[in-house]
Image 1 (cartoon, helix red, strand yellow):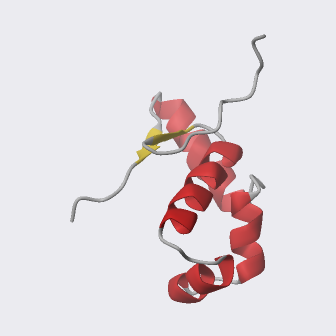
Image 2: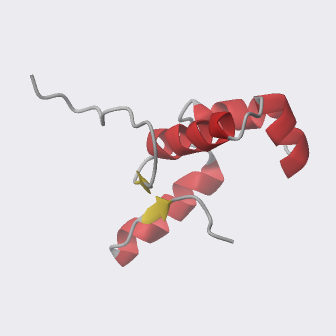
Length: 84
């Protein structure tokens, strides 16, 4: 039965088209790296609560602006493991 939800992925790349898809990508790569939210937040200089909001798909003002720019340009972001 078709649904509007994107199926959960076990690996990337992840196409980012919404706050939820970005959250899925962040959570995937964080857990693949064996990090807790607290560890990644500390490494990135963020509050753990902010990282949690991103992973849960909350649309922050910054993310809303970035996605709006992408939509206007007709482009999307793809997140994949770095090869460097």
